[in-house]
Image (tube, rainbow, N blue to C red; front, side, top):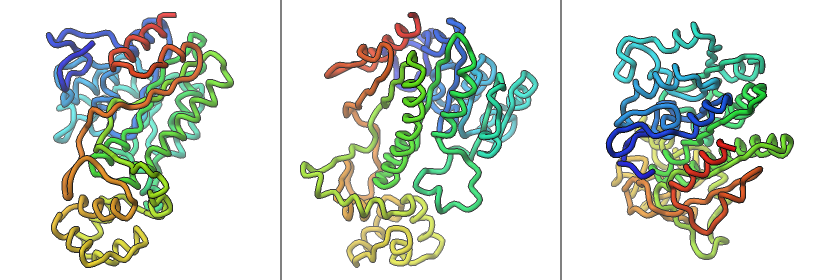
Amino acid sequence: MKTYNGAISVDVNNEDLETAWERAELKGKSTGILSSVFLTDATPGVWAAHTADRYNYTDIAMAEARRGVEVLLGAGEHNFLPNGADGTGGVDLVAEMQASGYEVVHKDSELVAAPASYNKLAGFFGGAAMTYSLNRPIKEGLTEPTLAQMTSKAIEVLNRDPEGFFLVVEGAGIDWLGHKLDAAGVAADVAAFDAATNVAWQFAKTSGNTLVIATADHETGGLKLPSRLASVNVSFLRGVRATTGIIWNDIQAGSAITKSLQTYAGITPTEAEIRLIESCDSGLGVADVLNLRAGVSWGWGPCEGGHHTATKVPVYSFGPGAATFDGTSLDNTDIGRYLLSALSR
């Protein structure tokens, strides 16, 4: 159903709308919600919560903590704790979850070691977001799992339910890096989401009765590829070792622009490129330089951040009922109706 921008599973009159997660719970299935950013963000939030504004983080946290999500994994533990600007204002939802039977983990080693026999599992990793995939190799002492590891563990735990399960997996870094027009960062997080999708696909091929759908809620940044794809410098993109945010932070910390780009992107910038970065005075200038080197462009000009666009996004499906999601063009509400229909069979 169409609604207003920022609504969390309510209609234009702020009446609750049934979600696919609720239909799955009604059918007796186990459920899970995973995200690489804070779990009270809009995309992970819409499944279990109903609230008038996507920024009502406490409402979303309380719904996710209290409504029976068996597996909840991602960033943003601060939204479930009582203190801080983005806290609940008094309720310790993490302690409440532990008291109600959740095992709570904070490290990749703890997640991997968690037995499938856990009936309820929650994991909080990172701060407001987990580490972008491109930055993982250069972050010392990283103890965050990958999206694929979270997906694998969630399936392992949820698959014990004889009634089946419903699992939402969001690779949110793709969107966040699209806002920054960070081509190398987006590519790395798309690859990480692909790895998570592959975990689900491999499980579905074995089980024979699992529907997997991979899509996006929107495109971000208006990414443009040239008509001759061979002109995209893929080898250069693969050689970039950090997101534009890391590179810009390095420059702000006192590193020379030339040294930072040599260290993290393997290039020696021209005087014009240095002036561009200086004129933008943000990571967007770094993005502009790297995009020019890579042969890609976006729907926003120099020094501008990207926004959500109306570009059509692909929908991939596999398993029983997958053909329902085929078509040259689907409306966003079609996806919702098809999900509800699949959960009614």
